[in-house]
Image 1 (cartoon, rainbow, N blue to C red):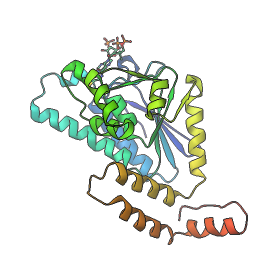
Image 2 (image 1 turned 90 degrees about the horizontal axis):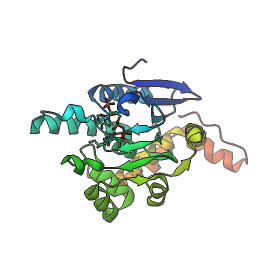
Image 3 (image 1 turned 30 degrees about the vertical axis):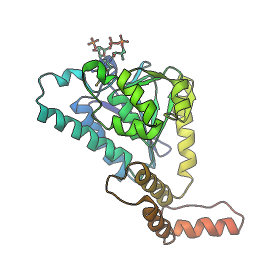
Image 4 (image 1 turned 180 degrees about the vertical axis):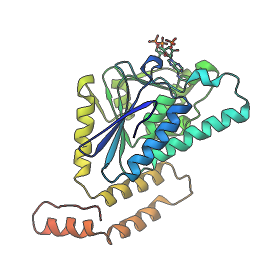
Length: 261
Ligand code: COA
């Protein structure tokens, strides 16, 4: 598919989605949200795609935030609608049954940090910088940042980072658990793809249920008990062909071949 603000490629069943507004450090405007919404639908519905990577165009930024130019003159109601729209698109990413990973190649500020945190996990390059600097604008995060940063780094650190607006470099982000790996800039996509290839070799239904159950543990928006959800999802795996294949292959001492059924 073609998008105004995104570049997409599919290689080895991974769709790389690149946010492409480098002159504005890939800031998230309405068009980017509309395009991202469609691109995530494509990831979920296209059987050729098994996973996705979200990254930013250019050497400097993943995404430097929501597009501040779009904030001018908004009423309270319009601001709430803007935040809700952002949250809805990010929920779609978070709840995708296929893995979606952020490859953070520079500034991930405000909405950029929130986008990275909505992904299932994050890798970053050495020059990455994370932050929720909205207080500098007399604002707070609106696309889930107060919730997801707290889930990822804990309440005290989240409070400090969001009240000071201070930025976090790659090494500190790794220490805090905000990212899983740091790479050289030129190796970021290759390392992310390498991890996704490992996931592609596993049973897709089981992978999607891992996502669902872990999301229930940290999000619990529908008031579901995560332990009960895990029991049901565990049972669901038993009626898949891949579960029969995986357990049989183990007992027969051979490598499992999964079909996603
Ligand atoms: N919204 C809209 N435009 C943005 C933007 C944002 N969040 N972040 C950067 N830009 C634009 C700048 O206005 C500038 O556009 P121009 O060349 O037309 O003037 C261009 O991107 C380059 O940014 P610039 O500030 O010149 O780069 P820099 O290297 O000096 O600084 C940052 C980089 C990331 C530190 C700085 O751009 C910044 O602080 N951005 C805002 C971060 C933020 O507050 N995000 C939260 C928003 S809710």
